[in-house]
Picture: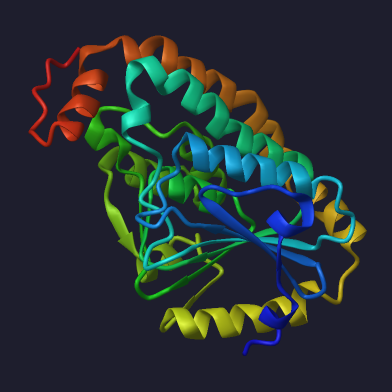
Length: 275
């Protein structure tokens, strides 16, 4: 058994919280919190899962000993993304409000975050991943922001990607909806490291945590994160609300945004009106 796993406990037993679509485990004597997306399918970031993640982040705010948060997906895939059903006009505003709260909460925590990625990492799943400081992936990982194919756009990625990999690469990913292999994502500078397979990734990332994160002060790590992310968080907190309004008040009033979502759910080709 992995030494870190011997040290695991689920927060549901520690706090009374019953997670519906995630699991939370504490590793390395409580210094690392692992948030595992687990809906039994493609780890869709629907309203229920987002509420779970938000509750987990809220619980971390009072944990002074926490040095790292690690996100990963149960099963073969990290996440297929946010629920397309919840992108419909009548639910989009509430969904985006909750989804964006996750990014604001991560910014306020100032706790280093890592993401371990296998399989599909798309849409809102990729946005959650790129909000992390360290991204690790195995060769099966695939990255993409396919929202424009559905007639919409990804607000968090529109802010985060240019900051992390530059405007030109960010525009290519967002405006084409192309899917990147792990190697291609690594070439953009998005990934910290790639591994041959998931098992190797788990072993090597655990060693990285032991050697790189655990020897450091939890308090000093938070000040360092606050310093390195000062500009990033300022941009996110100022521009993400504007993009949320652009999405809900203008984009979702267009025919094509609604047609794109509906055609996907109805499994047919969209009939664009260009308006």
